[in-house]
Image (cartoon, rainbow over all chains, first blue to last red; front, side):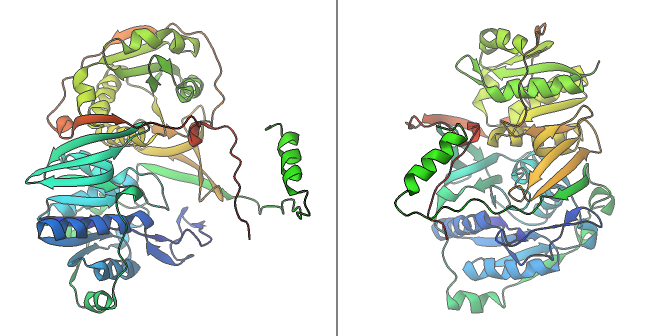
Length: 259
Length: 209
């Protein structure tokens, strides 16, 4: 199987994430970058499918140069190689432009499934996998807690409000995973060392044949007009529990008319 | 006055509160047009509820085909309605599925999309709350028909009588819309607790530091 895993590098959610006031874009330099949390589950699922069906796992990342760190981490988990789309013209792209670039890149590799995490912690829009499916006319098999591949048929359990749906489509298919799907492995020391020499194919927009006029901040189909940082939180009320803790909580909730 | 399409969320003959919120928001932008996509008979059961919250029109796409395939058919159905209505905006509530429907619709329309707005004004500008509320953002769609997903519990629903004129719309699904087939729908037993996203107040407790 040719398995592609979409990986995004995002600012650590533990950090103090900021927008850059000069152009209202995400200030990626302000906080240490990490692999998007749910993407680790996507990588794990890709590795699991490779172990079951044979083949190769290729990491696909669209991101600035610094994203290389996250790509190496994905490779250290066991992925075989990577494609890194990096171009300054991509700065400030919206989800739609990003999806167009991903779709174009998939067109340059052999792929049976492209597995993404269901959402990125920075944007939280959770729409790129659906957009890629739309652009390519590929089956959208998203929000998955279980993936089964049988020949060219991929069947997933799609999480719903009431339980799950079984949804099936033919390869090549777009998959996105939720946390329930698996437990990501930790990279072994051997994996970390091996990752250093695994190939990362870096592509520019020109390499992909993507017109810079389709991407980037100025060409985005939506814009941030302005933003405001929330005022610093005022200290809340601290109550020391000297046996009265429970009644203090009850009084507080009652005063807010919640009980 | 331009129409604003609102994708209706309903279950078992009951319209969800989020839809009433969207109809209210739609009315500040233009004329609210509800869009019901479901099995045969869905619209008849809920039309009066939509009328209560000011739907001037109710577009009805009733088709088993639409439900037999995942997500993509709803986007195609909405696009067909949009082609008829030429709306000033399309509003959907921010559920997991609706966000995906909205995104696919936006791409079809060549339009920008704003996800998880906590407020929408009369010009379809959105307010978004990001990074756990640390930053509040004003945003807008700059190309095409604004497609906006709105976080439930953000808008106070205000009742206002609407004509709810029914307009049936038929959709011929493309092959691409049928790429993901729904093979089974499994309902898992749930506790009686309310959904977190629908709660108006959340009280959380835990071991503090």
